[in-house]
Length: 515
Image 1 (cartoon, rainbow, N blue to C red):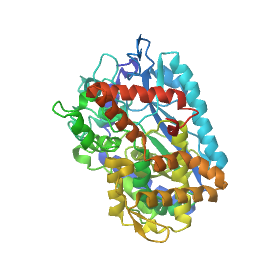
Image 2 (cartoon, rainbow, N blue to C red; image 1 turned 90 degrees about the horizontal axis):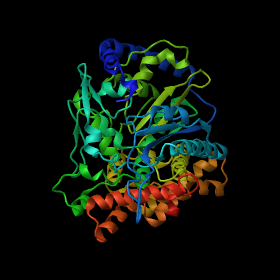
Image 3 (cartoon, rainbow, N blue to C red; image 1 turned 135 degrees about the horizontal axis):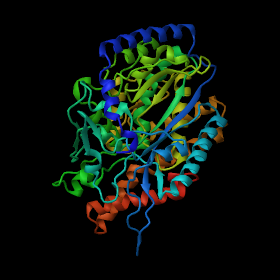
Image 4 (tube, helix red, strand yellow; image 1 turned 60 degrees about the horizontal axis):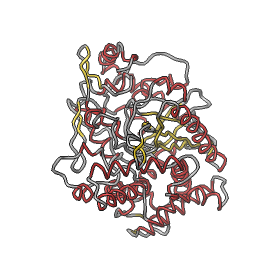
């Protein structure tokens, strides 16, 4: 553990000593405060605003070379905490993680360009700094090559007991993360549930396998949060089907008796979803990670956060932020895990906003692909709500089934959609044509001209036209390597190194379509 872990056990115990009943009572009081502010219009904006959370993991650049290229290249590596401060990124669950959050921008062509420019500027500077340390940041849905000389199983499961508190060896120095493994409502062990995968750990560290992008959409009128939330549920399956990017686990996590053919035939295209759900849903807290129910009113959104099971009752101090008026509810929101979730916050009253966070998407091969998904999500929020698209009335169970199908089969999933004329369709071409046409229309509503709107979404149209997603590319690579005589471990590792090598040349200025 790092030097910063000194005294961690004591700080975790302080959290566990917080009165759970009082914490819940204060969250309920805060909920009433938020609802009063909603009635005052405190969270309304005069325009739609977008933002993005973008997670990465770090790998070794690889200083050793053989006759056919890097031998030890691209194994997972831990990021020194001082480097995170230098590059202006935030820590995430694992010591290998780093997260960037962009500045909110108006939803228009300039705002979308600004989102991409900020990501490129900050990521370019970060890559220069990390390169000096012999590492680089990778944009991907799941890592598969553990640190050099270690196993993925050991890296994810190693922990120690410090003064009665279970501490994961490779977890960031965050009291909240470590408290999750020690609270009374959490499970005794944390297991991954996915085809042919076997892993149990004493902490939530297995969740650090996965990385994501999370588009944010600040709604103009907070009273309309339910409309946008419910539409986001209907587009979740189709957008995830285009985004899938985590079809393989580190090879040593698969069962010894599982053949490569069985893993490929039974494996899902987007394992990030089942990892988060299975690891975090154990214990007495219930299904905290899930596809949420529809919302009827904005007050319902607030009440759901307040009523959600508490697993980490973090103490809340005073402050002079606007949202410190409901600080306990805001703290509780940090463990309100839904694949689509509403958020109410703001440092000042003028910054106060109600937004929809769209959480199903894995990190993508390039920045352009990531911003394309931000543009698509925002465009759909604009268009489908304005045009009262009939998919908004699609049965919730169908939307959930679409989501599950996308997890398992990606772009080839059996999806059910409702087109503009109200006709139900299961045609892949019709689903994605209507989806992307409305995303383009929404961007045009926000001020983009037709050509610009098409350019923002071109990376996604290419996936529809070719039928190839990042997960599909990875699966094809592994199949080809197996056919060439590699064993399964070699095939997955070779695929992963090829993914990172191609990303090296395209992350900032290219596109997955260039691969």
